[in-house]
Image 1 (spheres, helix red, strand yellow):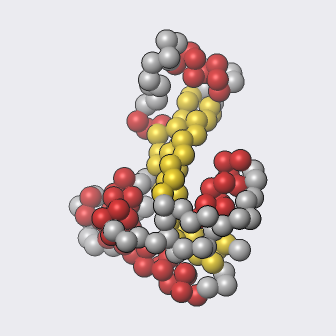
Image 2: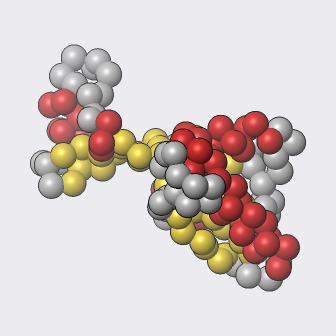
Length: 146
């Protein structure tokens, strides 16, 4: 069944989609400035590469997938590499289910920042899950770009 047909079947009168919570995930992309976070998201969503650089404040994307007759929702949060407000980053981590940490292969500092971000994610998620600090099981991918 095509995705549009599934969506119409699940919400026939243009009401809210009723996707089970277990089928909804939030992917958070984190990393230093200018490492290519937005380029990765754009390539994933559209298949295109945009070579013009525009700093991201914070972008949110939502994509639906039909897999084996079930509807899935993926929310993608493309964050800024510059976080003047630490609470914003913490909120992104608290609400995230899956993380991609991006660093630039030609910038060691961005790799070190990715390591710090990983530790911050583990520490933050540990508090939520009543685990020892830094011991949460969090789906996380480290991505070298450029």
